[in-house]
Structure formats: structure tokens, C-alpha cells
Length: 129
Image (cartoon, rainbow, N blue to C red; front, side, top):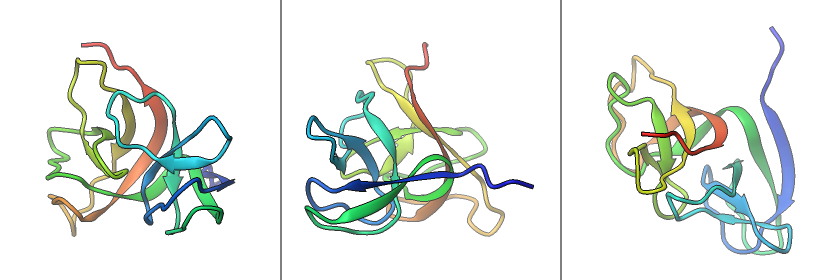
């Protein structure tokens, strides 16, 4: 089976933590997404970097990410940005944008705030209520 994960290298405009959701800024660099209504997310950073360093970003496909709240995969599969590039369950309305889908794991059935999770980064989608 072919690997459909797509990775792109970017330059960081500031400090980025490992597995943070990032967006391209006006200078063409990436920064951590901290706004659930942002439609600028381009992917998930694959390592921690500081400003000026290159960072590989998964722009489509399976990757690790950081949960910003408890996630119940049996009731919530869509995720959106919270603060500091972490992902939380998607809440319809208020202009929120889903960016990923959680991939459940039998060994980690109920991820909590701060846990590493597996997701499929799908890109921003303003899912209508």
C-alpha cells in the first residue's frame, strides 16, 4: 500500500513545539495556530524548533498531534485548534474550523489533555452546523 502522507519543509517564524498545528504567515513561514476559527492551518509540525529553523510539516495524512482536552473518539472524530497548536473536539458554529480526524487506538481509548494522539490531518474545513 502506498504511503499517502505528504510532508513539506518550512521555516519557523517562532518557537514551535513537536506535533503542533501550524499555519503559514504573510512571510511564508510557519507559526503555531492558536485560533479555532483560523482557516490558515497547513499541517502538523514533526519536531520542536525555534525561529529560523527548518521544520518538516505533515500537510496531509496520518501523524501524531497533541490533545488539548479530553477526546472521546466514540462520540467525536473531528478536531479543531485550541491554543498553542493543540487539538480539541470540534464544536460546530461560531466560525470554528475542523482540521483533523482522530484515529482511535485500543491501547489509548480516551486521550486526555496533553496526550499524544494519532490524527489524519485533513486541512481546514468550515463544517456547517
